[in-house]
Image (cartoon, rainbow, N blue to C red; front, side, top):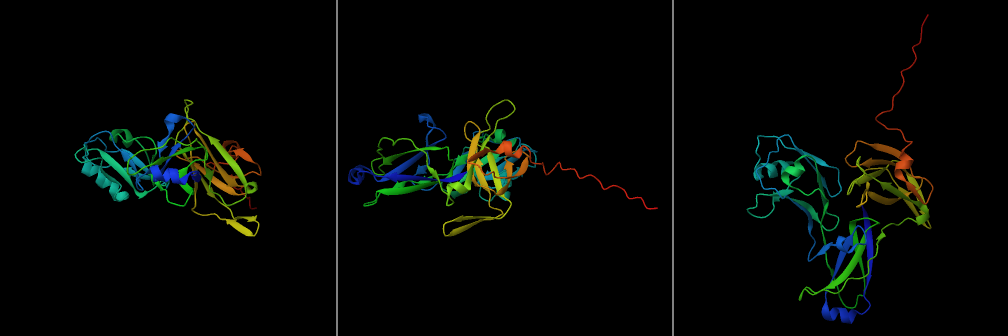
Length: 315
């Protein structure tokens, strides 16, 4: 995912303030009216996934993989005697990720997972054979940012979506925290990925993913990890692109597509969520490129076979 910036300008501040005091931000993977979801709320909120199946559950031997805030998955292997009650499940989950698991409403006996962070950068994804048993949603859950407060005399506002895509669309509208009234929506538009390097130093990496039945792989993470040191000069600024633990993560949309701009000439290792498939490649000197085409000729680090040395005969 990327940090997407949305600039918001108020034309008639006096009229707006007479009726409203907040700005809502809504997001969609495509410019379709029914796809929009508000990513703001009265206060910053964490990502939450609620289970729909009440316990107890037959979970012995099953696994729940938790992707928390775009980090590497934490596998939780349930071990014990069936059936598992809510206390058993929350105890095993919280032993590995403290305070993550609880009850989805008092007396429901259903599982709730809550991220320890808040805002749009707060996220939860779960996979594994325990997901269906617990009734957890197989879609990504995101937190929400506090609605923007409108104040006099400010007419320009900047909103940052910390878990967006360059392909996402956004709408805004005014809201009154006193009367709960809302305005009509703004025109739909896309935001701007937050970058500091000049566009001539970047190349747009594109990837499309589908399963064996031709269906798009939705909300699937594609992870790029820089492997080499590179310098990019922009006027008086000399930016160092360094190898290390900093990962660049994008997530496929409703058609299995993801994109991200990468530094030209930089070497990356790319990983695909859910697959033991990784490749190392160098970003080409081009405006854009297809990731799968570029890595098609890259060797698999797990299948490289080194031939044995020829025997030397001593006489």
